[in-house]
Length: 246
Ligand code: GLP
Image 1: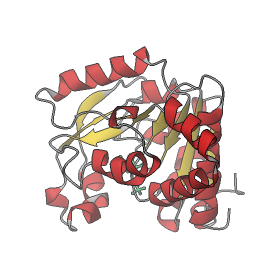
Image 2: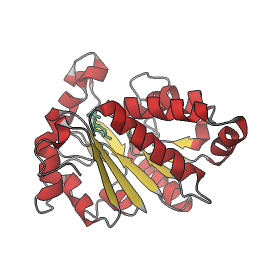
Image 3: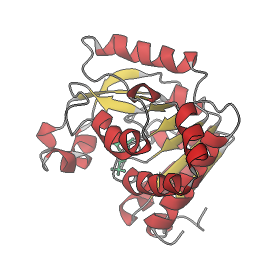
Image 4: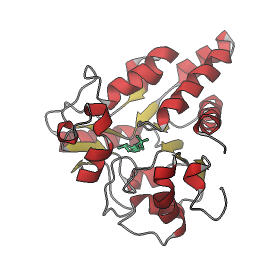
């Protein structure tokens, strides 16, 4: 696709289609800069539905985010909970409980990871999982090295990831939390469908490794190749290292 705007419109269509299907399983949602235009497109498309359709989408909504920083709660604007409240939950008029995230303020993050996994399993597991790509090949916060059976857990963030996410922390990588709770590759690969969204030239070579080289722990996103229903949506710059856009 030509640009991030076109990618975002296509992703938003798929997310809303999934929510409008009969008895959908929960959506799996992601944060990050790649997703800002996606949620913008989703809000615009939502606004174009008539009131009864909007109400039907609202009533049935249940989503589980991939991850959250340990130590940040919803009142901290740098938390993923605050990002989702701003981008999705507030504008669509959803109740906070309809947009689930791990609790970054839980007293015991290990226990919180177990609770979050159990809540997801109890809700039927993910139907459609939205994913971005970390510049070091992570998905969610599954940092390399990471195998395909890694479960939902609390883990240390790599220096590369803390540097990548520094812009949300005033440009200071040292201010990025040291740990996060993330769904594992196990829960991600258990989703019915996966939508990997990658934009920008900076991710082109990692995208190539993820899609075209043999799966390996050094590129956690490469395990997605094993999923039978993986769809990859990319813009032109992200696709430059691929043999053809896919
Ligand atoms: C973050 C998130 C991922 C996200 C990725 C890419 O750290 N944990 O879920 O997809 O890194 O982020 P961005 O879209 O800002 O490049």
